Image 1 (cartoon, helix red, strand yellow):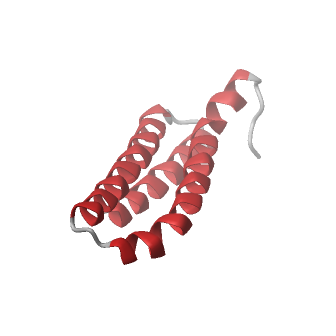
Image 2 (spheres, one colour):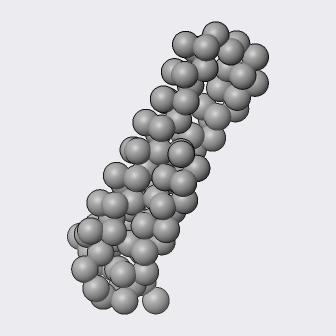
Length: 96
C-alpha cells in the first residue's frame, strides 16, 4: 500500500511543479503531494507495526535500517519540491 501512496505522492508533486510553471493554481496539487507523502509514511509505519506484532525480527533487521534512511531522504525531497512554488512566488522568481 505504501508503494501506491508513494507513487501518487510523486505524481501530485510533479503536477504541482507543472501547474506552477504553466501559471495555473497549484495549491491543490501541493496539498495532495504533501498529504500523500504523509499517508505513505503512515502506511510504512503500519507495515512495520505488523512485523513487530508478528515478531518477525528478521524482516525488521533487514528492512528498517535501510528504509529509515530512504524514507527520511524522500520525505525531505518531497517537502522541498512541494514548497518550491511558494518560495518562488514569494520572491517573485519565474521558472523558465
